[in-house]
Amino acid sequence: MSRSPFVANVRQYFDAVCDDVLGQLVDGEAATLNLSAEETLFVRFNGNRVRQNTNVEQITLSLQLQRGGRTSEHSRSLSGQLAQDVASTAQLLSRCRNELLVLPVDPHQVLIENHGQSDSEFEGQLLAPHQVVHAVVEPALGCDLAGLYAAGVVIRANRNSKGQRHWFATQTFFMDYSLYNGARAVKGSYAGSQWDSTAWKANLAHSKHLLSLMDRPLQSLKPGQYRTYLAPRAVADLVGMMGWNALSAAAWKQGRSPFKKLADKETSLSPLVNVTENFGLGLTPRFNAQGEVSALATPLVVNGELATLLVSSRSSKEYGLTTNGADDEEGPRALDMAPGTLEEKDVLTALGTGLYLSNLHYLNWSDPVSARITGMTRYACFWVENGEIMGPIQDMRWDESLYDALGTKLLALTSHTAIDPAVETYTRRSLGGSRTPGALIDQFTFTL
View (cartoon, rainbow, N blue to C red):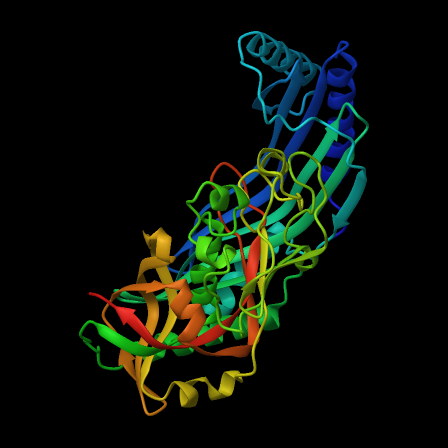
């Protein structure tokens, strides 16, 4: 696919809107504008047939205004019609000004500054709209496939009154799907920037193989501790909890970080664990809403020891820390967990007797102080004996601390990794994701 005209049109449009708004500022005012835009084809499948399809074009603009130690921020969807949207953003500016009149002074205000310029565009080779149905459905003939295909351009842009300019546009797709056999299902995903029919068929073949294993006798297990293998997707679910305050500098300073003991050097994870914020994965822009540009790679956990927390500029000012370009949520945007040495072909042999878990879900902190997480098994999860899959298990609840699962109980990480892209589409297509290996864990705790 050649470069989408949507990208060029939105860039020109964003500059025109920004020029108008920034030209209205008076002495003492500073402003930042952030744009989120997309042009996406959505196709929903059920029973390996199209159930819904639609094209979405949307543009959202947020405006942050500062004056006199106060900050106001509002956003709205825009029409793409310049004259109409110039009037709308003028109203947005007026709304911010009125709010500043009644807001108290913010003692930890992060002043708007010029953090430089960046410009990144990634062109993809996506399926043409008329090719999508055949490309997805034909290799899945005979399967009960349900899922969502989304593809197109996603844009993030930032400008401010100090001269800062950032631009990020990427063409990507994802196919988030399940294969069903009655009430049983296997979860799969295929994503990237270039559709490869051979890779899609291989992805489906792996899911079909797992689904065939679901025909084996159902295994009922008692609560207890079991040697357990977590496939890369399950590891992504597990370490994704690090984004729930564990790596937040503000949460640490406020005493509510699940990694407080790790940050305070009271404990450590396994030396096998190395986690990096890696924007080299190309999943998301390096700049945040303030326009601060993170390093291409920031080590977070090195050989089981905490290297650094994610520090936003606000936390930097409030707690006297050094910022590293984190956004206000202080969660990883491109988490990359380093692989180990366990070969994929040797996983079942290394597991021996225990549980093989493809996916986890319904995760939450059960005891944040001890970094303890609870969740459920889901989809293709199996009981294995002497390196052979015996059959699928009934859903089980587990409860385990990251200090244990990624600490003393961690036996090995696989040499193969998988990227788990963000596939959320609430209000807009998300950016970001993670890359993780599989993990072999001893005595993983199941409670129900």
